[in-house]
Structures are given as structure tokens and as C-alpha cells.
Image (tube, rainbow, N blue to C red):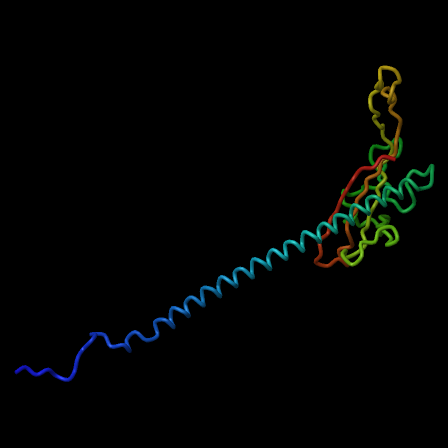
Length: 200
């Protein structure tokens, strides 16, 4: 007679050896999801900063452009007959001289000449509100009188001439340099500087 023992072995590996594997996998997945989420948050913050900087530069550009328009108005409304409007820097070369009396820099905001007058645009003429860091500014430099080329004479419909092709009258030329604000008050905001030549 064969007797069977009271013990049986259903598996060679005890159940306690598999405990904790699911927990480790869950922790690994949780760490991966957290890293992906942090990366997404970093990209979003970077995009928001780039959009804010672009908006700040656009506002600064509009301020500098408004200052340039105000400088043109100041030139046109200056007293008739004066070589350079009061407060403007005279960079012209007097008749008979080979060089100007005042050596004007290309960027008058960096000029140490005390005669340079930096004009600030009044808020009544341009008011950007709370978007801009400061009111825009400009400097006008009088370059002197030069020949102003006119367009060639043309005929409209083959009859009436248009333009004065053979005449080149003298005209006053000004160099306008504008900026979106004083760096001392703007701080770390964007600053845009524009420059243009204006014929009056």
C-alpha cells in the first residue's frame, strides 16, 4: 500500500517573492508622468515670456514711431526763417566752411554736448496708457540746406506737365532720432530707437 503524505507543493516559487513589483512599476510611471508634466509647464512659461516680450517690443516701437511723428510736427511748426528751431541741435556747415561748427554724433542720445535737448512727447499728444514703460523722446539735428531732387516732368494724358524736372531748389534737412523712453526710467523693459531724415 502506498501512502501519500499530507503536504503538496503547487508551485516551486512562494507567493511572497512576487510582492511589491506592481508598486515599483507604479512609482516609476508616476515619476515619468511628473517629469513630462514639469517639461510641459516649462514650455508654457517660456512661450508666455516670449509673447510678453514681443508685446513689450511692439508697444516700444509704436512709442518711438509716435515720437518721430511729433518731431516732424515740431519742425513744421517752427518759426519761419530760422536755420534751426529753438532747442534743436545745429549740425549744419556754415557757408564757406568745410566742416560743421558742432560735430554731431549719429546717436545724439549718447552725445555729451550740453546743447543737445532731448524732448519728451507730452501725454496729451501720445498716451499709450499703462502698457508703455515711459513717454517716448526725440532729438532733432539740423543738417543744413541741400539740393532737393524733384521728380522728372511727366505728362498726364499727353497734355499737362507734372513736376519740375529741371529745378532743384534748396531745402532744409533734419535728422530725427527717437526712442521709446529714457533708459533710466524704463528699467528692464524693451527700448526701440529709430532714426530718419526729414526734408522740410
